[in-house]
Image (tube, rainbow, N blue to C red):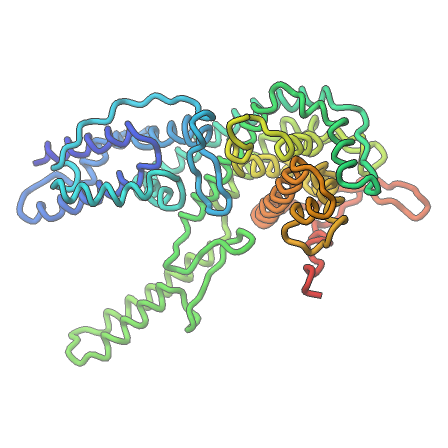
Length: 500
């Protein structure tokens, strides 16, 4: 029987290795079924420990290695398939596979022949299980992250995170050369068109000035690198979410901070459950030892207090952002070009945010592949990558102030009712403008909303320390290196329209 259990686990791992990472939920559930079978048979037979059998098959028994067989396979799938071939949908918090023309090929071994006894036991049960597993096979999200955490445990997760951070460093190195090339062809001055020219005039002037971005031969590679960087950051945020304990009511807040949701009685869901169960048992006169249930209830309160007190001590996402910030120190001198006068350079800046602004302009206005839209090809992860780099370089406010797409969109909004929800449709009906401009404005509006979401998350999870700035006196004298504390932007504290 011990041999059969090992063969069964070997079959399950070979089956997973022949499929993509979306099938990790199926693997976790099949291993749970096998574990339950082992427990039932152990009541009648002398069997090896299931933990020992699982460790042997997954090659986790080494004292010096933390990268077992399954952890290595998951890393390879994330690195070679998920990051390059999946696109992020920020609304659903899921990765979905992009269309086939955009995918990088990946080789996997052939799927082993299905053995009914090694799955759920019978043809009918296997059919039912396949129908359930199919629901998770077309995307990657929180259910898959929960499965990864359960399968790898605390031993292999740190190794997986570290391996992915090394891959993140490689991606940033690949991006560095392309950004330096774009900085080299950036014109000395990029003027801001006057709003009086109208939305069509502003778009035309920017197109004439941003040929360095629109005609750059490696722009798709830049977008792909930003997409993979952003996908990896979002993957870490999913890992962070999966590692919180929902039974204690700990969930990500509206701005990504961890917060605890309490029941009506002021306790977490776990404590409330134990208290209600203890009260029900104690009220039963036939209960032999109700005090043991009261003790468990008190222990639940202790666990609640110990965990929540350490809730904000650190997270995988925070560590990832700190790691990426440290990597950016190698290029900070080049990509951060402080003004010699201490004032913001509006038309002559050569900082990263200006480069990314041009890349975003291309993303919003130019269809890079005739068979699919840019959104279908790259998804929302480009914004996660570009905005995170801009934020960690301390350029997010300048980006929001000077972005080319934002300027065109603002001019377009000023030509119609500012409170309209379908701005591009309103403009097209009123001013009879081209469908190309309508698509650009719609893409720019979505990009601005997504960028705002990413920056809000970053401010909550990785707030900047006190900064050094320049003070301009009333006389016009510039005083350099004045230290001031980070404070919320005025735009963040103003009331929203309709709430005044």
